[in-house]
Amino acid sequence: MYHTTQQTVEKCIPETIIALEKEALNKWNNGDPSGYLALYDTDFTYFDPTLERRMDGYEAIEAYYNAMSGDVKVDKSEMVNPVVQATEQMAVLSFNLISEAGGQVWKWNCTEVYRKNPDNKWKIVHNHWSIYIPKVQEMV
Image (cartoon, rainbow, N blue to C red):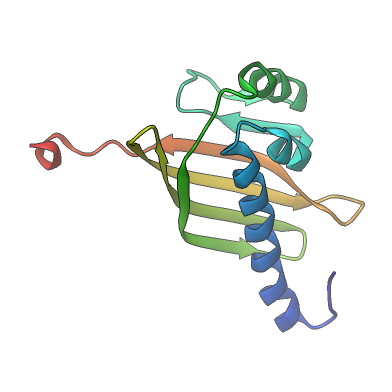
């Protein structure tokens, strides 16, 4: 719910966006893409680190996620350094994610653009995931 003062709105938006993201991540970590699918808007665009090109439209991401439904299992994850930059109608969430699955640690970078729809609900219109790969000298 929005309050009327700008100062309250500025505090409320980041909390709301981060809570939405954490809820979707918790479902994702258990093989359930429905949390993210519920957040994506119809004109959604997506960059996935495993795909060569941007994916456009809700139907494309729905098919992509449904094909892997039940396959994703993350033992533990932590959202690190979340930052929300927002206006009353748009918000950009960026964060790092550290996840563990099957004894392997994965480090991710994520940027998402949220837009408030006419029903006053926040929806993701763009998502960009990339995986952190250490430089060769760090690996030696």
